[in-house]
Structure formats: C-alpha cells, structure tokens
Amino acid sequence: MRCSPHAALIRLGLVAAIAAAALTGCNGGSGGYPTQINANVRVINAIPDSGSISVFLTPVPNTNSGIPQETTTVVQGLPFEGLTPNYVSVPEGPQTLQVAVEGGATFVVNTNITLIGLKNYTLYLFGPSSAVLALPNLDLTANTGTGQFNLSVINGAFGTPAADVYVLPPNVSVDSTTPAISGVPYGSSSAITLLNGGTFSVRFTAIGSKIVLYDSGPITFENAATYQIFMYTKGSSTLLNGMLFTVGGTGPGTVINSKIAQFKLVQVAPGTPQINAYVQSGLIFSNLPYLNATSYALVPSGASPVTITQSSVPGVPLTTVTPAFSPATDTSVIVTGFPGTQTAFALQDNNTPPPAGTASVRFINASPDLGPVDVYVDFVKRASSVATNTASPYILLPAADITAPAPNTYAVNFNYPGTQTIALSIPAFAVNAGRTYTLYLAGPASQLTNVQTQDR
Image (cartoon, rainbow, N blue to C red; front, side):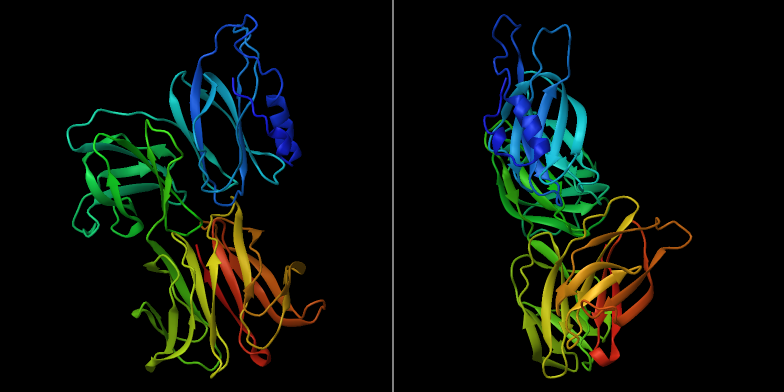
C-alpha cells in the first residue's frame, strides 16, 4: 500500500487531515494479513476553475478481508492541466475517491469507484468545479496490423455534448471528409479505433458540424502503438484543447495545445466612426460602429498584433494591440479613446459555465476620461475602484433558466469611488442562468452609456 510522506506540507486543514490518515499504519500486506493486490492510477486535472487539487483513495471497508483500510494520497497540489508523472499503486476493489481543491472547504468529488487489480487506469477529472466529473478509464491496448495504430478519445469538454474527431493529413480540410471517431458523448470514452500510422492533425468538431473547435497541428503516430486523446476546455465558450497519452507506456502524457484561439471586437471609442480589425494582415472584422460588439472569430493561437483602422481609411492604423491569444481561449479586444488618441486593450474572457441557477458577470470600465468606479448590483457593492481600461473579477448572480418566461433583472450603478454619487445607473440589467456576460461602462464622462455582451 502506498502512503504519502509529504502530507504535512499541505496547508489546507481538510487536505492535511486526510493526508495525515495516510501516514498511519503503513504496513499493509505484512503482519499476517492477506496479500494485497494493487491497481495503478495516474491523474489528470482538467478542472479549469479549480486551481491545484489533491486526490485520495480509501478502500471501502470489507469486514471479511482482514486488511486495514488506509488512505492513499495519490497526488497533492496538482495544477490545472497537470498530469501525474507516473502511475501510483493503490489497492484493488471498491474505493472512496475524494478530490480537494486548494482553498476549498469541501470535496469537489466524493464518490466510490472500483479498480481491478494489476490493471492501469487514467483518472480524468474535468468539468467546472461546481460539477466535477471523475472518469477512471481503464488503459487498454489492442493488437494492430503492420503500419497501424490504435486510438480512443475521451470527451471531458463540458459544453460539448458530443464530438466528432478527425485524424487527417495536416493540409486536408474536414469539409469533404468523415470523422475517424464520431459522436463521443461528454463524460465518456470512445471505443478503440484502428487507423493507419503516419503524421496527422487531430481536429475536434461538435457532432455533425464542420466548424473546427480544436486543431492539434502535426502529430506522428507510431506503428503498433495505442493512444488516448483527451479533449477538455480551458474556459472558452466553444474551443477545446487536447492531451495525448501512450497507453501501456510510462510518463505523464503531453498537452497538445490547439493551433487556434478566438476573439471579439468591442467598439467604445467616442467620436470614432466604423472600424476594421486585422490580424496578420488579414481582415477579421469590418465596419463595426460605435457602441457595438462582434461575435467571436477564429485566429491562430499565439501572440499576434491586432491592428485597428477606420473603415473609411483602411490603410491608416488608429491603434494596435498584441493579445497573447492563448490556445483554445477567448479574448475581447476593446477600442476606446477620443479621436487622435484611440487605444485598444485586450482581456482574456472566462467563459466557463457558471454553477446551476446562476449567471457569471464582469464589469469593464472603458470610459476614456471618467476614472475609477465602484460597481453596485441591487445597491450592494460588488466591485471597488475598477480603473480605466480594466475589468472587475467575475461575480455570480442568481438567475432563471433561459426557458423561464422572463430573465432576472438587476439594478446596476457605477459610482464615483468611495461615494454614493452615481455616475451611471442601469435599472434593469437582464441575465439568464448558464450564461456569461460583460457590462461595459462606455462613453465620455459627460455622456456615459453602456454596452452589454453575452459571451457564452
């Protein structure tokens, strides 16, 4: 039985208490007890809003076994997108799986699973922290023919109920081809599929769609190997990311970041007529008027300049900003400032689905000359001193489902900081559950207004 010697390093009282239990009685399999057969487990943290996690397994008590029931600390402090470096040996049979988030007061997972002795498992943990799913996937290999490899896919991308998977030469479009693996439901694994070896790009789409949500770039699949690909979200409203594992081998696997990201453009520059946006000299958005926002558009991932021009003078830049365009993420590019001093700033959007019965909202101060503001929602301060060209943290508001007769509405006031003096009042800001919103304070101080966007 494996017992962690490092539990005392965890600062959380909850985690420390569980880890301390793992330090007691580390002599299983001796003293006349029956021989314990073990399984092997490795862990992946794909909970985008969790921070670091710790994972514990405790055998479900069996009064007939005669074996003491000790907790195994499988991993401590595993960050988002973290992969344990190797398999950890744990007892076979029914286990209580508990997952603690750093800073949390309760377990985000507290359930029973069953592990078969002498077998290898990859424990996938995914979904928002309010609804984490745990999938202990049995790492199976299969025979192949000459020049072939095996592939299975796990869908951990909440918000993507079912996905198609294309395995194509890098220069071949999905438009005229069929998926290699079709309709993988959320929270499950596909069957193992036999494919010809070589160098391919893996692409994910929603089932039946040709809109690419993930592009791995070239991957070389070795002959006679068995692979798992795990799809998950980093907080985008639609885009996915991927991890690749060799089944039957050792090591943690590899994050294969997507070659695509997406952004939207928000035009809140007073006195500036319609604008265009270019990325790598390609026109992405055109003719966006004042106090409007676009939907998201795909761009290559990685830092790249976004050049803003006036639509009527497309060859003359008004301003440029260089977002990070992190793989598989959403970004908002906001254009503000008075004529002659226009500027643009970029903010990464967190479009992780909020907990059931809530909407997620942030507030952005895009007024070029007002200065910082406090934000009140139904007359309760929810954000303090939001500076010019910055955003508040996201907050959660109770909200009715989209199918309800009417959305929830909230009175939102932007106040001068530290005072009860209102700069702008919005009497009925409407939200629905499961959605993510941004409320922009816009316009000059003498003529304030707002722009509202639904980002998810």
